[in-house]
Image 1 (spheres, helix red, strand yellow):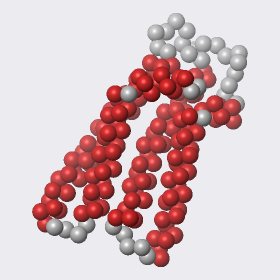
Image 2 (tube, one colour; image 1 turned 180 degrees about the vertical axis):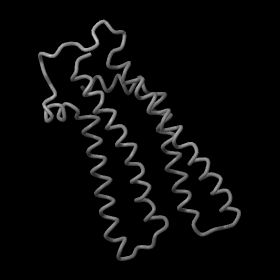
Image 3 (cartoon, helix red, strand yellow; image 1 turned 90 degrees about the vertical axis):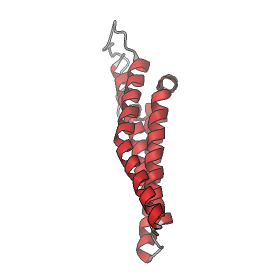
Image 4 (cartoon, one colour; image 1 turned 120 degrees about the vertical axis):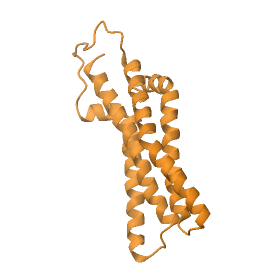
Length: 168
Protein backbone atom coordinates (compact mmCIF):
# COMPACT_ATOMS: atom_id res chain seq x y z
CA UNK A 1 0.00 0.00 0.00
CA UNK A 2 1.38 3.35 -1.06
CA UNK A 3 1.00 6.72 0.64
CA UNK A 4 -1.46 7.88 -2.03
CA UNK A 5 -3.69 4.89 -1.31
CA UNK A 6 -3.75 5.82 2.37
CA UNK A 7 -4.81 9.37 1.46
CA UNK A 8 -7.53 7.99 -0.84
CA UNK A 9 -8.69 5.73 1.97
CA UNK A 10 -8.87 8.65 4.44
CA UNK A 11 -10.67 10.91 1.96
CA UNK A 12 -13.31 8.27 1.24
CA UNK A 13 -13.92 7.67 4.96
CA UNK A 14 -14.36 11.42 5.45
CA UNK A 15 -16.83 11.40 2.54
CA UNK A 16 -18.90 8.65 4.16
CA UNK A 17 -18.93 10.48 7.49
CA UNK A 18 -19.95 13.73 5.76
CA UNK A 19 -22.81 11.98 3.96
CA UNK A 20 -24.04 10.44 7.22
CA UNK A 21 -23.71 13.81 8.94
CA UNK A 22 -25.86 15.38 6.22
CA UNK A 23 -28.74 13.23 7.46
CA UNK A 24 -28.88 15.52 10.50
CA UNK A 25 -29.29 18.49 8.14
CA UNK A 26 -32.08 16.59 6.43
CA UNK A 27 -33.73 16.23 9.84
CA UNK A 28 -33.57 19.98 10.42
CA UNK A 29 -34.94 20.63 6.95
CA UNK A 30 -37.84 18.25 7.39
CA UNK A 31 -38.78 19.93 10.70
CA UNK A 32 -39.95 22.93 8.68
CA UNK A 33 -42.32 20.83 6.66
CA UNK A 34 -43.79 18.94 9.60
CA UNK A 35 -43.95 21.30 12.56
CA UNK A 36 -43.06 24.92 11.99
CA UNK A 37 -45.56 27.24 10.35
CA UNK A 38 -44.16 29.22 7.44
CA UNK A 39 -43.36 32.68 8.79
CA UNK A 40 -41.09 35.43 7.56
CA UNK A 41 -38.17 34.10 9.59
CA UNK A 42 -38.46 30.62 8.13
CA UNK A 43 -38.52 31.93 4.58
CA UNK A 44 -34.90 33.00 5.07
CA UNK A 45 -33.80 29.90 6.95
CA UNK A 46 -35.36 27.33 4.63
CA UNK A 47 -33.36 28.21 1.48
CA UNK A 48 -30.14 28.38 3.49
CA UNK A 49 -30.79 24.90 4.88
CA UNK A 50 -31.45 23.56 1.39
CA UNK A 51 -28.27 25.16 0.04
CA UNK A 52 -26.25 23.83 2.98
CA UNK A 53 -27.61 20.32 2.44
CA UNK A 54 -26.80 20.46 -1.28
CA UNK A 55 -23.25 21.65 -0.53
CA UNK A 56 -22.79 18.75 1.89
CA UNK A 57 -24.03 16.22 -0.68
CA UNK A 58 -21.86 17.66 -3.47
CA UNK A 59 -18.80 17.65 -1.24
CA UNK A 60 -19.54 14.08 -0.10
CA UNK A 61 -19.93 13.05 -3.76
CA UNK A 62 -16.52 14.46 -4.63
CA UNK A 63 -14.92 12.89 -1.57
CA UNK A 64 -16.42 9.48 -2.35
CA UNK A 65 -16.49 9.22 -6.13
CA UNK A 66 -14.08 11.84 -7.46
CA UNK A 67 -11.18 11.24 -5.11
CA UNK A 68 -8.61 11.51 -7.90
CA UNK A 69 -9.59 15.17 -8.43
CA UNK A 70 -8.94 15.92 -4.75
CA UNK A 71 -5.64 14.01 -4.82
CA UNK A 72 -4.54 16.05 -7.84
CA UNK A 73 -5.69 19.36 -6.29
CA UNK A 74 -3.80 18.67 -3.07
CA UNK A 75 -0.81 17.34 -5.08
CA UNK A 76 -0.66 14.14 -3.06
CA UNK A 77 0.17 11.93 -6.03
CA UNK A 78 3.80 10.96 -6.28
CA UNK A 79 4.95 8.45 -8.87
CA UNK A 80 8.20 7.67 -7.02
CA UNK A 81 6.70 6.74 -3.68
CA UNK A 82 7.61 3.53 -1.95
CA UNK A 83 5.32 0.90 -0.54
CA UNK A 84 4.47 1.66 3.09
CA UNK A 85 3.05 -1.73 3.94
CA UNK A 86 5.21 -4.08 1.89
CA UNK A 87 4.84 -7.80 2.77
CA UNK A 88 1.68 -7.17 4.74
CA UNK A 89 -1.45 -9.24 4.57
CA UNK A 90 -3.54 -6.05 4.65
CA UNK A 91 -4.34 -4.38 1.38
CA UNK A 92 -6.53 -1.41 0.51
CA UNK A 93 -9.76 -3.44 0.31
CA UNK A 94 -9.28 -5.14 3.69
CA UNK A 95 -8.40 -1.93 5.52
CA UNK A 96 -11.36 -0.11 3.93
CA UNK A 97 -13.67 -3.03 4.79
CA UNK A 98 -12.55 -2.96 8.44
CA UNK A 99 -13.09 0.83 8.56
CA UNK A 100 -16.60 0.43 7.12
CA UNK A 101 -17.41 -2.24 9.71
CA UNK A 102 -16.24 0.00 12.55
CA UNK A 103 -18.10 2.99 11.11
CA UNK A 104 -21.31 0.96 10.73
CA UNK A 105 -21.08 -0.33 14.29
CA UNK A 106 -20.44 3.18 15.62
CA UNK A 107 -23.47 4.53 13.75
CA UNK A 108 -25.70 1.77 15.14
CA UNK A 109 -24.40 2.10 18.69
CA UNK A 110 -24.73 5.90 18.70
CA UNK A 111 -28.29 5.91 17.29
CA UNK A 112 -29.98 3.00 19.09
CA UNK A 113 -30.56 4.96 22.36
CA UNK A 114 -32.16 7.89 20.51
CA UNK A 115 -34.23 5.48 18.41
CA UNK A 116 -35.53 3.66 21.49
CA UNK A 117 -36.22 6.97 23.24
CA UNK A 118 -38.16 8.22 20.19
CA UNK A 119 -40.21 5.00 20.11
CA UNK A 120 -41.09 5.35 23.79
CA UNK A 121 -41.99 9.06 23.41
CA UNK A 122 -44.14 8.29 20.38
CA UNK A 123 -46.00 5.57 22.27
CA UNK A 124 -46.67 7.95 25.15
CA UNK A 125 -47.79 10.78 22.85
CA UNK A 126 -50.10 8.51 20.91
CA UNK A 127 -51.87 7.70 24.16
CA UNK A 128 -52.22 11.40 25.06
CA UNK A 129 -53.12 12.47 21.51
CA UNK A 130 -50.61 15.38 21.51
CA UNK A 131 -50.39 17.78 18.54
CA UNK A 132 -46.58 17.54 18.22
CA UNK A 133 -46.49 13.93 17.07
CA UNK A 134 -45.06 14.67 13.63
CA UNK A 135 -41.84 16.15 15.02
CA UNK A 136 -41.18 13.06 17.07
CA UNK A 137 -42.00 10.81 14.12
CA UNK A 138 -39.38 12.78 12.25
CA UNK A 139 -36.79 11.99 14.93
CA UNK A 140 -37.94 8.39 14.89
CA UNK A 141 -37.50 8.21 11.10
CA UNK A 142 -34.05 9.84 11.05
CA UNK A 143 -32.60 7.57 13.74
CA UNK A 144 -34.16 4.55 12.06
CA UNK A 145 -32.62 5.61 8.75
CA UNK A 146 -29.20 5.97 10.36
CA UNK A 147 -29.48 2.51 11.92
CA UNK A 148 -30.48 1.03 8.55
CA UNK A 149 -27.51 2.75 6.89
CA UNK A 150 -25.21 1.40 9.61
CA UNK A 151 -26.51 -2.13 9.04
CA UNK A 152 -26.08 -1.70 5.28
CA UNK A 153 -22.49 -0.53 5.81
CA UNK A 154 -21.76 -3.62 7.89
CA UNK A 155 -23.32 -6.17 5.56
CA UNK A 156 -22.09 -4.55 2.34
CA UNK A 157 -18.62 -3.50 3.49
CA UNK A 158 -16.90 -5.99 1.18
CA UNK A 159 -18.87 -4.87 -1.87
CA UNK A 160 -18.34 -1.18 -1.05
CA UNK A 161 -14.59 -1.67 -0.57
CA UNK A 162 -14.30 -3.58 -3.85
CA UNK A 163 -16.32 -0.90 -5.67
CA UNK A 164 -14.23 1.82 -4.05
CA UNK A 165 -11.02 0.18 -5.26
CA UNK A 166 -12.37 0.05 -8.81
CA UNK A 167 -13.08 3.80 -8.78
CA UNK A 168 -9.62 4.89 -7.60
